[in-house]
Each structure stands twice: as structure tokens, then as C-alpha cells.
Image (tube, rainbow, N blue to C red):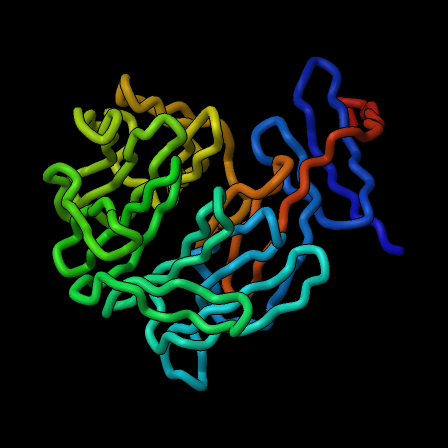
Length: 284
């Protein structure tokens, strides 16, 4: 067993060193510590992470040398066994319905649904849409159509899409648990309250990734993690990130999954630890 020592300097009238001794690397996000665990580094440029809590599988897309395009795969976060999924030659989006465990993929020729028995994703509809983002929440599915960069709500089990408002040039979005739609366009960061009244965020010009839990929605920017207030159109910085994620999502029990380069990591919250404060002589 090996240990990782992290030193944090606490500035005060009497200088101190805070030492964390762990058996794995750690990350500090805001006021919380996480153990960092490498899940896999066998896939090139993984992104579009989507987690299924019932199977403990983490789905994602990656660049496949054999396909000469994007492929899709999943890794079990407990066993770390990984499998490629067949059926799509140009994958762009990944999503899991947390209520049913159904897994969906988007491509430039429509919507696909994954069959875990055959390990194949088959097209089920929306053939005229170029889907590069899927969000499933509150028993509802939303997508971005890359043909016009607008958001659509999907009906009839993936057979029909209806535009949501007049949101143009949408590059990324999320739907929180209160049915507010957070999205970023070339004009800034916005929130559609209950999918209707649109409020522009006055604190953020761009967000690269949205994350939502049952209480709050966060945005990843160039300088850290911000908590977003939809109704007020404001954002408050809550943490500086020591990594720049290609993709990042919440998991179970406070876990966070993220990808960087060819690596996918799991951050597990450290709920209890011993802290040793080492006093130093400020005159030395």
C-alpha cells in the first residue's frame, strides 16, 4: 500500500501546515475532500458521461480507431469491466433515464436506444434530426438538434420532437429537478423558468458543463465551479477546480465522475478523516 500526502498552507497569525495522509490521490472542491480513483484510461477522448445507478454502469462516447469516428462504451464502476457497444457508427450524445434505466444515444440520423441483452443500440426515431445532446429528467426527454442548434422536447417514445421556446445557437444545456432549462448560447448563459420565461445570467458569459442535483444547478467555467440561481439570473463561485473536465456529472452518494484526456475518474467524498496541524515558526 502507498500513501499520498497533500500539504495545504493555512494562512493565519500563526502559520500552519495541514497534512492529509491517504492511500490514493485526493481532490479538494470547495470545502470538501474527495478520493480520486482512475476507472479507465483505455479509451481515447471519452466524454458525454451518463450514469445508471441501478447497474452501476457509466456510459460514454469516445474516439474509436476502428470506426474512424466516435463510438460508445460503458464501464462498471465496481468491477471496472468495460465493454464497447455496437450499432452506431457516429455517436454524438449519451443519456440514461434514471427512472427506468433505459440508455439512449444520439447521432446525426436520429435517436438510438440501447438493448443490454444484445449489447446493441438500435435507431428508434427522429431520423431527420442531428442529435448531439440528450437530457432526460422528470420523466421527460430533451435534445439539441445540431441542424439548427435549438432545443426540442421529445414525445411519443422518441417519435416526435417539439421546439422549446425560441432558444437559438444553443451549445449546451441541462434541465434541473424543478423543470428549469439552463442553457448557453453565443449570446450568454440563460435559464428558462419552468421552460418558459427566459432570464439571462448577469454573472456568467459562458458555461462549458452544467451539473444538477435535486437541490442545485452548477456550471463549470474557465475559473471554477459556480452555483446558478435561475430566477435571479446570478451565479456564485463555490470552488476552484484543479482539473479541466472534458465531461463531468454527479453519481450516487456524493460521487462525481469526470473525464480528462484519455482518463475517466471517480471522485468519492471523504466523510471522516484525522487532521494533523503542524505549527511552523513564521520567522524561519
